[in-house]
Image (cartoon, rainbow over all chains, first blue to last red; front, side, top):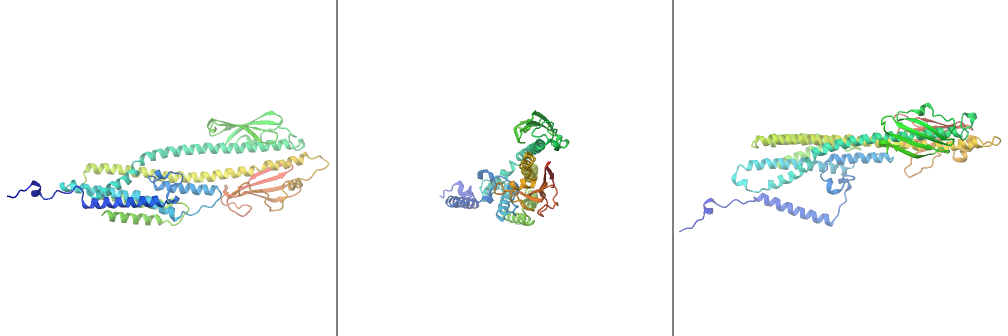
Length: 268
Length: 209
């Protein structure tokens, strides 16, 4: 009498893990172990592959446009320092291309194609319960894809707000700088009046009778008012034209030097 | 199939990336590759989001994908616009800064005028003599400015002089002036240049570029 079990009638149970899954799992594990060993043993500092000013643990999630933007700022700073802008290096280009390829080619391709394959395989009851190598690749692709997709909308909204704030702050700072330059010009003009003798329509070592010239009473930046505190000291006040709540006050001494600057409104 | 998609995608994007050639900016290459990536992603979505995937999942996936693509597009173009604006602002700030540096020379010149008028009527040195005492290296075309720091590229040239009048040209070669075609005292085009004319009546300032 042959004793047969139920399992003998149906054939061998399908493995929970397909052969491809095991191969991919083992390959990834070995690759990570090797890379971990290499990076721990041989530290590699590759600034071209990073984003200037950003910590290395975060920058892997930033898009390649962030790298390109960092290069643009770097060029601007070089020009500010009086240096000519250099061509983008091959290392910088490769860093951008690698990041672009990983986030927008590798990730989406693995995720969508792997997802589609799983849905097709789910029609088979046997394959439904089988972990395959494509599953791992799909998960890996999903991590890459979602790492950029999840933050896309919030970042776009935040970035828009930041850009508006930046432009507004810069416009105010520019107006402030221009007003300060104008006030220095007034100081020079007042000092020049003070040092000239009366025969040349000057003040003969005094600011008495000094009047702000027409060209310095109002500019595109501000309106200026002068008050004589004593024969050797003036107070100049500037009222910003584009920003009505912003004012700057300064004092001019007998040597034509400005001091005791006071800032009001958004100029503070 | 996955391998084919990956290989084709990488080849197309790489070719598009290197198409614009060398540049001081990364944006031409990145934008070219970005266009290739957009076409690739749309083709990938068209290929994968179809039956036997359930219709409901297809619709939701398309909507989410398009929302993400548009959001990334906004971030991408916004970053390019913002960083280019920041770069131009740095150039503007530099121009304002160097003009202020040029104007900062005025007090020293006014000091010479002050010395001139402070002299007793009997023994009066000329304006030029007093100027040469302050700037011994005075000669036609000479640079009388001493750099204040390593990358200080300001130059102040004596472009003309007589006993009662000295003309100075302050030139900053690496700062952009108002007119990019303006030829400066040194022959360089487009850079900041200020003129100061020193007489017994004071300092007249003309912003040339």
